[in-house]
Image (cartoon, rainbow, N blue to C red; front, side, top):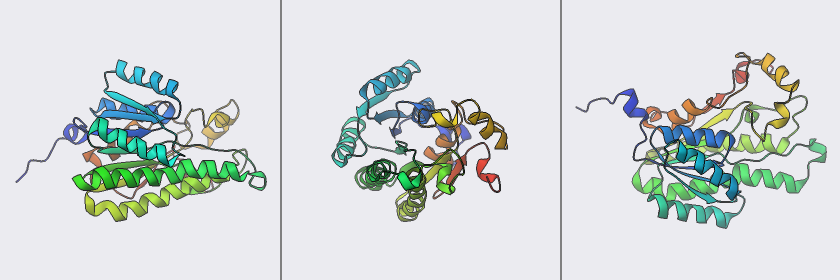
Length: 265
């Protein structure tokens, strides 16, 4: 009879390797800190080398082991090269956090198709390609893996008012459904696939939603009366990336101050 692990042991990521896309700032950097604090070795990616270097310096100052590689998720060749680099550097990938994303604000009647493709390619297509390659080349052969996709509460429906971003809504909805499909397909291989659906967090992408006036209006509608902060995603990503969440798969977890619970929100 095996001895049940303690809660600290279940959350311990010592010896685990984590690949985090969009890990140089905002929510990605916050989640990198969380996984590093739990003991994981990190490989973070984003498009801009300077931002990666700054993030790596911050993470190393906090005592974490981190590698970086600049990658454009819209370029298939670069995504495949990222997997090559990750396997050469880390040896294997235990945890994949698909966080890279983009948005485009425009009324649907005026939404440029090149902008639609840009958002869909990065937010949805690259998630599938990277997940496919990581599972095929590392997780499935080892019968172990944790995939955490970052969707959005925008996946749950549209909005009335200032946020007009049809491609963003559609892409995050695609990620949510893809999460469930891959969870069903890959569960037999010891791989969990879940999605976190953040609400409003202060970030470069959400700048228009966190300006004075708009921010107060959003917070007034939330059950918790405040938007996310610099530690709001840490617990969620650690649960889904560790053995504490080993029996959780195919779940869409809103981390949104209660927005998804409000009827008519």
